[in-house]
Length: 287
Image (cartoon, rainbow, N blue to C red):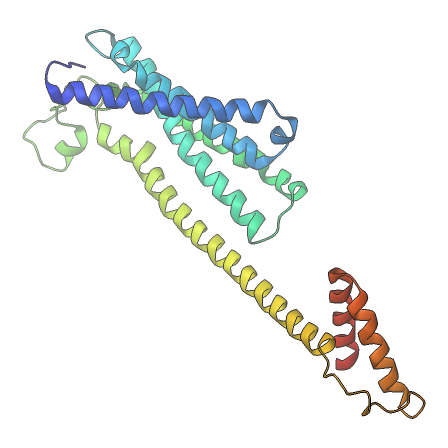
């Protein structure tokens, strides 16, 4: 990649800076997860580990992208960079989808770790499997070529006409003039852009479901707390009587004397015991 003009120079600097920060953060996450046996035992943490590993390798490749592309590199280094970028990027996207699935199953449907273990193999295995399959296919079809600032799925030369365009009648050519990367735009969408946009829509939908579920739980908790507070005020804060108005205990009914003793006992209890007593009293009254 040439950096003679200010635009390319600024883009190269910003790219290396952002990729360096991303690499550093991913390595910190990897270190935090792998240094703890508790973290490694959790499905959510292992999914984060997969995301961080994919991000770290693509960030490292992008930092040194000039070494892989012509004129510094050759067709073999370009293939290597394209393979790693395709594998890392699409695997990262699918790991994010797997993480959203884990969130919605845990938060909304109440799956525990034991139940999640049954699905963990698919959540951890599908992303690298799809990434490896598309990366190998693109390598076999000679799709990796210089694509602006890195090597990825692209036609070579960049202005060549693909077979797809010829079949549509958009060119007078009878066969493609692409040396490499024929129909690259189709493979870009099939191997990356279509899964990417599908994942974005899916993740937005899942987050909406999770937020709605959490909001319902908060509303139920607030209503239960309000009801408990009302019962507390009704039982504990009873109207006071003047001493002259209070009849002799023997002249009062057994039920009223028992209620007064219960009120005094409630006032002496701890907050948690008060809550249990109030709930038990309310249940007896309703029955």
